[in-house]
Amino acid sequence: MKQVWQNLRSGVTEVNEVPLPQVQPKTALVQMAASLVSAGTERMLVDFAQKNLLDKAHSRPDMVKQVVDKAKREGVASSITTAFNRLDQPLTLGYSSAGRVVTCGEGLVGFKPGDRVVCAGGGHAIHSEYGVIPQNLMASLPDSVDFESGAFSTLGAIALNGIRLAQVQVGENVAVIGLGLLGLITAKLVTAAGCAVFATDINETRVLFAKKIGIPAILRKDAGKLGLAFTQCHGFDAVLIFADTPSSDTVRLAGEIARDRGHVISLGVVGIICHASRIMKKNSFFKSHVLPVREDMTKNMKKKGLITPSDTSAGAREETYRHSFNWLLLENWKSKTLSPIVSQLKKQPKPMI
Image (cartoon, rainbow, N blue to C red):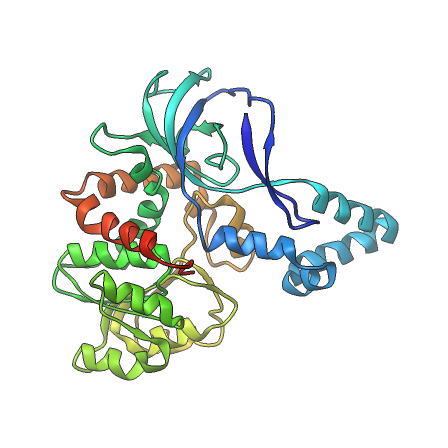
């Protein structure tokens, strides 16, 4: 079968022939019909792979520290060899897809060969002709939803998880910081839920794109002043952050525009140490939350105490992923939420992100 690989040493992205994976207990072998390319996460991995060794080390000081610590324990030569061996291992890309079940493993419940399903998870729902998907990262796809739309299900789960954590109510003011694909979907869903939405990004192209699909959006440099004006100086009831940056500017902005006892939810990986206190002074609820199905991003968050083991348990993953089906089954969700975004993306002369 064909599978997309990323070579971390050379930076080359390639399609290779690999053996068909073997189904395991409580998993299913799924023939993929569509998989979603994540312009944020996957671009970050590709960009990292294309850097030279010095730039790789500069961009990932955490990995450098691991190598140094290993060298202290086991010696320099052994540690360098191990590091290069890791770079030589191909990396699979993708974490959201849809397809049909081909074979069910022992103990799998609720699925049978021929079922249409949506799949999630790095290392599982990858860009490949087939994938082995654990039971808690897979669910049935309604006949009324096509495979291409179903491949967006993981992003729908992330968006709805953030909305749920923010306890958003009809008629409230909601700010969305970050207008990548996930931020756009969230803004449309919150609008459909009867809220007044205000969005911002540092990228002018993203802001213009958001305006084209009916999302009120402004550049970051004007967001503080205009955001408060949007709420008549009361502040936003909820602020949802979708960014992947070491900068704490997104959290600083959230602290400026959130109301007293509002909700600030970060679903990206952002710097928070410098400005979280600004939010706490307003007695606002703050949570930095990584989607449980994104297992590859949780280790460092656990070490910093930003998420707990219960956030990433199998039960939590199942509960979070079930929210994606609410998103898929929303009345007119495709025509009013997803289609405007996808149709405009297809019209873009160059990548938006």
